[in-house]
Image (tube, rainbow, N blue to C red; front, top):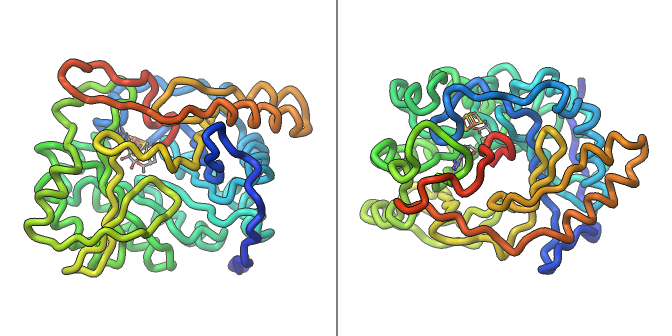
Length: 344
Ligand code: SAM
Ligand code: SF4
């Protein structure tokens, strides 16, 4: 197999514009709701997963992703659940890479827990993937086991090395959790930047029933930043990756640090994305229940006309934003669905 040489991307006009004038150019596609970990803030230990018949085939996922790309989506992120545990996922990635070759798609990427990276890093690179996000909340083996319930941090660290060796650029995502990894944020920052990786911190979001209490986990990033500036000089920079993170440059390390703050700072005004689940349900906002079913129109005919209409109709309903709240009075999750359905 030969490596992909990525062409210059044509700056085609986005066709998907929501009622608030925001162009939708970014699709996050959850390819499975299953996962080999059970992170405590994401899933309960005993999850009931979707029956196979409800899950779109790889061909159907490709058809839907292609329908979005035809409508101006430039960035496609595969997520899950854990995208790399979906059977034959590499054949989907290989097929989707044709949109990179044609220049229709600017970026094909994924968010992964890293457990399968040693096996797949080389193939990902060969199919045109250049940057990936790896979730890592702690590097301490015992704490890693506690937070993921089933994970092995050495395997993840080994996967990260494998990805670096083949030339994938890595951004580490770390969910900031009160009394769990607060003290590790500084060391994690230094480690990431030493390794040439960006770090993004994420606030926990109230999605789905979990076994614990979210008020015990929630750590506002405003507090984290307040702590970090005691040791590091942080300079706000306009760097953007197409995501909701706000970046700073860390003077001492020269590296970048991102903050994703759905709770302390609402980032909806610049939202350019929609999320599609592995059953073909399109969520126009991570923080709202409203969704559109694309599976029925997809399965109703072989052509993409019905799907295309359903996408247009869904985008015309994209809401202005979300209003997550985590406090003692709001014990229930803001939304019933888990993050593993929409992939973050
Ligand atoms: N399994 C992959 C992974 O962990 O990277 C991809 C899916 S996971 C749902 C995507 C991201 O969502 C991860 O970085 C994870 O830490 C984050 N996440 C999951 N549940 C969350 C929650 N309730 N609040 C904030 N982030 C969450
Ligand atoms: Fe799995 Fe990712 Fe959720 Fe952890 S955060 S349980 S790795 S889907």
